[in-house]
Length: 87
Image (cartoon, rainbow, N blue to C red; front, top):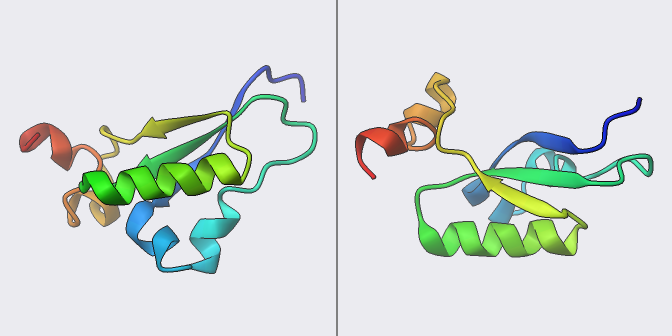
């Protein structure tokens, strides 16, 4: 639709690494997406690195570490904007 770059939905790293199909589906890109990024939510370095590797293998051009999402589903796990409280 004319976008130069697109970003997938937030992916919970831990669930992605456990093989969750919904999280894995968020790594898919449409053939028309020429520049695609994956958004990873984690608070553990090793999980983040492993999730970024999976994103790269799936074809992501870049990865964004989510440090600002205020939704309860993220903050209750110590992810998203909760990282700003306890870096």
